[in-house]
Every structure is written in structure tokens, then in C-alpha cells.
Amino acid sequence: MHAPPGDAYYAPSVIASLERVGPILDAVEQATLQPTSWQGRGPLPTHADGLRQVQVVQAIIESARTGHPVTLP
Image (cartoon, rainbow, N blue to C red; front, side):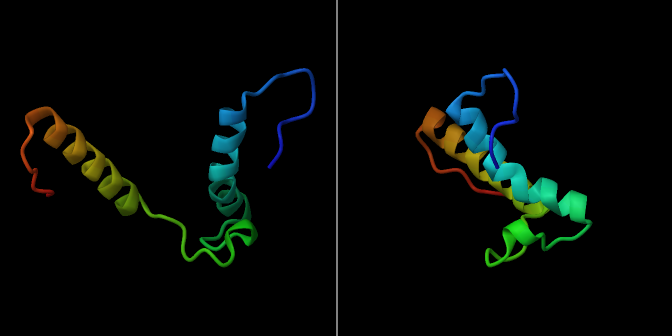
């Protein structure tokens, strides 16, 4: 995925973010869970995968704050 044409400037970090979500947008556009841009990478992450990632990050932050291990739900 490349920056949209025109006079707009997109920071490299924005372009990198767009490249990461590109396959998800392709899945929506193609109405499939296996978009062509995602081939060879396995299934797209689900909402449950995203929730688990958030839980892990929250546990890391809490453990760093308290200095104690945190049990994941």
C-alpha cells in the first residue's frame, strides 16, 4: 500500500500503519476472511485475538506498575 496521491504528506509511521491494516481492509472489500493480500499468513486475527492482546498488554503494564506477577483472565 502506498500513500494516497495528491499534496497530502503522510509520516512514515502512518504509511506503516496503513500497510498493516491493508489486508484487513482488503478482507472487508473482498467479503472474505482470506483476502489475496493475506495469502500465506494464516487466518486473519479475530476479535478474540485482539481482546487477548489487550489483556496481555494490560497485564504487562499492571505487573510493571506493581512489581508483581499478574494472572491473565
